[in-house]
Image (cartoon, rainbow, N blue to C red):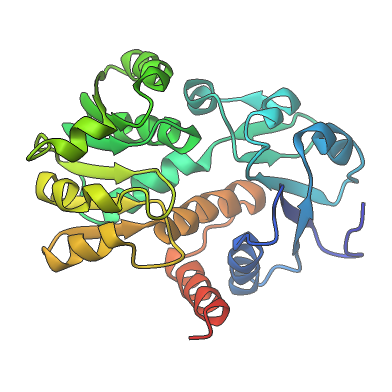
Length: 279
């Protein structure tokens, strides 16, 4: 596998992968730290992951994993308690004893804390997918003991309820259609949307009315209807870019042993998104 002659090498893997901002963020971190490291991107599907990793030489230090590799990577390294809880990882640390880690959980926690959600008792969660699993772990880690999950397919919330119970939190499932038709949603300390762009539009007013801090996993296009509604109402807002930046800061620390300010990566991320949009 291609690598630079002198420095260490890391990469992001996934399929599709062309959209990933990870090379921008990690590259900015390496420049700030003065590291002669390279961060690549490779299109790899789940079936090809093990072979890709087996072909790496000793200069490789770590891999960032996006869809559809966050579960497939579990077979390639030793997990920690966070990975076991979530059942997915976004980081593979290479070496004699490969390790798998999930920095999405810590990244979301940092994003929510930065937005003011330092103490969470009750949380509103939109969605039941892979990102929702990381959100459950993050929210439980912030102290949440009650999770109201709004789900288009309530039957898919079962694994979230089991995960939350193991972390000391209770889950109440609210069908999406009911949430749309109800006058209001129960009050919460924070609202976290893990659904795709546009999906939360019809619930924006209700979500904003329910929580003083709103997180939307989307980062492009931005702002979403949910984020704009929250901002107009004076709510604190965090975006998918906040999550991407904070989880990347944690990945850089795991892979290099050095800490980089989140602002360095945030500036690079905003510039890259603006360039894509022609702004």
